[in-house]
Length: 267
Image (cartoon, rainbow, N blue to C red; front, side, top):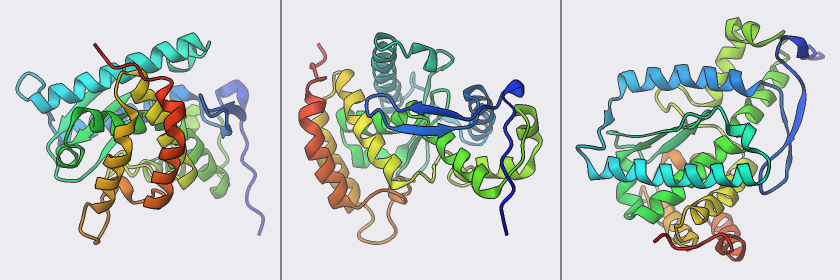
């Protein structure tokens, strides 16, 4: 049985758009206006913070560190995008960086720059540079618009007929695809990214952390620690859809010469 054709009405805010991922240059199909992705993400982000109170940076050195690391990476990414005539792509980002009390080994970044780190991740990162590795990776997902890419694939696969952002908001099936794409619920923000997306986020992530003055070489021992987390049982949520440990480490080793070109230690 043929699937229903996905109709897109550009005049109402939808257009079939082939874009390219920064740095890697990979072509991708993003069917959903970025403004719509950010609107949907903001709603879920605010709902999450209603149920999960953020730790105040004024009362916690760890929360202060999360904000510091995030701000440095966001600043570096913004400078890079502006320098490469791509600043418009993130001009509507309103960055926020929060630490929440949760034992899961997890972190995420929603479209629009809403970043959350779980306290359960900190015993594995162990230091600020490794935290920058994780936050760079998660921010990379947002900058590369992997969420839009995955949701676009979901809309096509389900054959959903939509006509603009308003229709998308009111379409329960489309809304459900968004929730599934971002793992909204018990694991809010955990995107079911493809392994290609994950490896690409690794690539961008080590460069982003290097741009921010964090040594990208710390990424290798960090991901090795992550691989050993859980004692061989269920992997941390952050690793649930990731490539094999060996493949990740191999790619990171290959990427180090490129990443180090962007690295200047912070003063």
